[in-house]
Amino acid sequence: MSILPNLLITAESEWKRWGFTTVPIHGRKAIGGRESEQPYAQFVNDYWTAVGEGSRNGKSPYPWSAAFISFCFKTAASGAAFPYDAAHWGYCRAIVSKPRRYPKLRLMDPRSCI
Image (tube, rainbow, N blue to C red):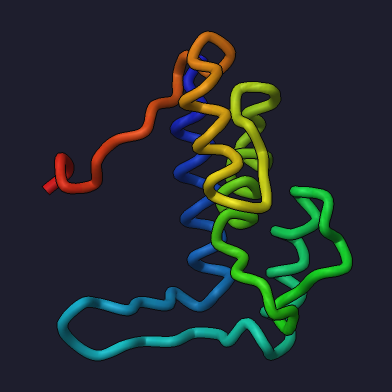
């Protein structure tokens, strides 16, 4: 069974929770919430908690994008199909070094998506 539908629902739900923030390459930013303010700092804590770092939040001095991705996969009920990690290199390393363990995941050159 594909987790993609659940993953998309989760990502969209988080986008809504953050106030539909957009930061286009060209054009005007639309910032719904700031990570250093409540309730957004707590949202970031939710992401950190998903990777075992529950003492961190949006006011912590750590980038949280990898924790966010892990949170999305966990919320989408990926189970053991995703190597949750607090750092991008952590789950990327696992995907590359253990392809049989994560057969549905692969890393792609972002330029190939253009």
